[in-house]
Image (cartoon, rainbow, N blue to C red; front, top):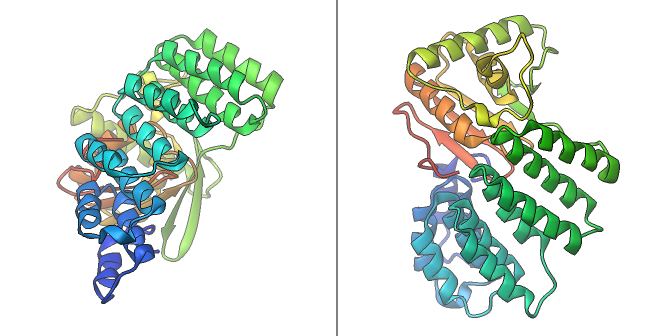
Length: 333
């Protein structure tokens, strides 16, 4: 629980208080490290864990920690030591490789797995996500076409995949193809797509924000503060990356005005409305946090300029932004 809440110190205290940790305890602590982008600590604890206690869950936890911290050598070493590699273990290694854009090796793992097993959509989604982050639209389309053949009945997976492919085309400026992919998805898979939502807490109250949200009674102040923060960031040399905008800009919009009103930015701005200089901000998001290559740079700079600690949790893990301008992920998303 403490690991999932981003309070690793409390998780460590509980773990250290247990005289003889079992496989569940070890795996839980390794997973807590992994969630909080503390891959080296996860690997160190894994190495200290008695061999006879390790199981498939442990392997997935430690490889996932390596994946989210960019620890390729450690992941290779651990993966090669695992005697029996099941689907979850291989999928986690594919994710690790894809996050580092090592797509040929990831595809080879999938090909070898499929020689004696049914294909896994999770593995293909890992490559799709990596292709999105590296703006490789041709690879993205190739993988998604393959998924349509292999997984015709997995509608939700195909829907998520089509969003990644469309966003990949948008990232290289091909908005028309992105529109075509979106239109095809609506025709074949339906229109319902889960919106991104960010939650934050202040004085015991839970606040919810969506992109460009205007529902809060202080929305004018929140948006004004978001613009102020954005202006300060630009003065400090930050440049917004237009490749993370997934549609053409309207006449009254700029790159900055679109990207500074995402749900995460509004949640941060809310705290600055409530306090002139907040010292701690925590945000939780229901989906993968949008373009962490964007958010990470923005939030690191906010934490540094205003000397505050910010924790952001999404569906994949937790990022800790420190007043020294660093993130626990060490710029690996």
